[in-house]
Every structure is written in C-alpha cells, then in structure tokens.
Image 1 (tube, rainbow, N blue to C red):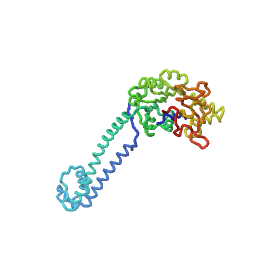
Image 2 (spheres, rainbow, N blue to C red):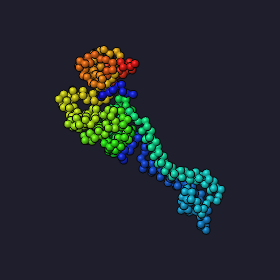
Image 3 (cartoon, one colour):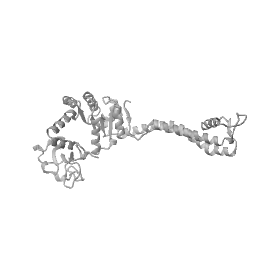
Image 4 (spheres, rainbow, N blue to C red):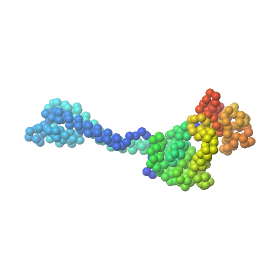
Length: 363
C-alpha cells in the first residue's frame, strides 16, 4: 500500500453527518407503547378505587369500567369535564400523588415527541454548520462503491481520520454504507457545482473520483478542477483510451481499473509467485508495503541502493526518478523516498523513518 509518512498528521446536496440513530418507527412504537401503558395503569387505579369516585351524570353514582376509561382519558388530557370526580380522601390522595404525575408524564411524552423532532432538526443544522466551518484541507471521495470504499480504507489505515473524509454519492446503497462507516455524506450528482460546493471541494486537499462511468469521471474532474485549481485529483477510469481525456480535464493521476486488474490477472496466471507478491503489496497490514517517507539526516549523501529500505524511486523537486537514474545517484536534502518495506516492524527487518528519527529537511 502506498503510504506517505510525512503527511500523516446527507435529496440534492443534502449533508448527512455520521451519528448513532435508531429507526424512527422503533422510536415511535416505543413512545406509543409507553403512552398506552400510562393509560392502562391509570384506568386500573381508577377501577380498583371506583368506590371512591362519584358519577354526577348517573343517578346511581356507579362508576363502571367504561367510566374509568372515560375518566382516565379526560383527566390525562387535562380536559376534565367534572362529571366524574373523586370524593373520598383516599381517591383524592391517589389523584394528587399518583394520577397527577402520570398526567404530567403523559403530556410530556406527547409534547416531547414533537419537541424532539424539532430539536433533532436543529441539532443536525448546527452539526452541519459546524462541519462546514471546520472542514478544510480534507479529502473528498466521489463514489462509494468498491473502489471508493477501498480508497477510504487505505486512507484510514494510513492515518487519515474519518472526520476529514467526505463522500459524494447519489446512490442510496452508497450513501447508507458510507453513513454506516462513520463518514459524512453529501447526496447528489458530483457533476453539479452545488453538490460539490456542499462538500467543500473548494477547500479540499485531495479529491478521489471513482464514478461508475468514464464520461461522469470527465465531467466531475472538470467541475472539481474549476472549483479548486490546487487540489490533487486522483481519478479512476475503466478504459485506457480515456486516460488522456481525464488528464486534460485536470486529473493529476489517472488509474485504469480494468487494465490494472487485467495485468494482475495476467501476472498471477504467468507467474503465481509474482502474482502473490503483487497481491501482498496491495494488501494492507500483511507482508510488504510500498511507502513514501522523508529522507533522514544520516541518509544525506548516500546512494539509494545503500539504504536499509529497498528504495525503488526518489521524489526530487516534485518529480519521480527511478532508483537507477543517475540524477539521484546521491541523495540530497528535500528528497523523499518511495520504498518497499515490511508492513509491520520485525526484529530482523527495521522500518527506518517510523521512529521519530531526525529528518534531513528539519530546521
């Protein structure tokens, strides 16, 4: 996996921030059962103590089960017609200290449902405003299918916090999966300016485009580049013939997904051992990894081949040189190394640059 050690540190345009939520139907059902429970308990209390109540509308002053239900509903709803009323001290005490709290709880339950809906909407608006205020130098991933999910996993595994990753997707499946993974999601078409503005593409550090169609990739790349001339754009295309077009649209790096998979299949078929090594390099946390790191002080002036790491390329002045290029026969301050190394520290295989060693470009 490519790892840069030096850089470690929610309808149309709708923003959805990650949160732990229950189903609204579950919440509504719970509240409904609670309200029915309060009604049932109050009816039972009145019915058990029915001799303490008088029905002014009945010549016999007899309180039936129907009267108990009627009295409960008008009492808990604070309507109180007065035709049925407690008259014994016991019934009045029960009304004062038992039924009155039940009435308050019943009203709070009904009003609280409405207030919670309003509060939830306000809370979401506040969270979205705070997210927009703090979101800058983040990563925007367009499309959360297999490629987008793998890209996010790679970023997270290499130290990028999930809070700094925003997903743009218009498919319901992708939105739900990204939301379940704890990622902020902007719903909509990534070729539309308004959607990308909601994702704060203009302030993004990197944009990864993994659309399902190459024409969508071209349009999304053009729009992103117009909104943010400085962002580093990585795009995936299906056909090799579309690579120049995507590059002309503003992509800094273009990956041909079908070609890459085809090469891996060919290598694995031609040489199973070579295919296993390539799969190892592409699997995070196992065996080998490809990483990019800064040059350390004690490596200045040395040849790339003499370092403990297996150097395969050197980045100098934003240009990549292969390890055998005579231009980088000796390493200089400011160089960055692309190396193959163990994905985990081993006693017999150290990982230089991962132990806070002094770097060559430090003051």
